[in-house]
Length: 70
Image 1: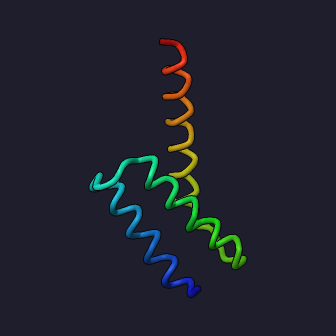
Image 2: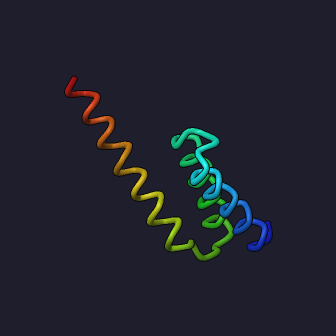
């Protein structure tokens, strides 16, 4: 897969996240899948997307911990 195509797909996923047309978990999974594709092709991973994924993972972990306290 071409790097330009993957970058375009990542941009679309980020745009969907900003407009909240899908759930955050679904978009997170889509981002992870695209990042895995980049890794498979030994392509560079965008730092901003890595940061976004890490932030989402922290949010989900906090939500899980808070749900367990109820």
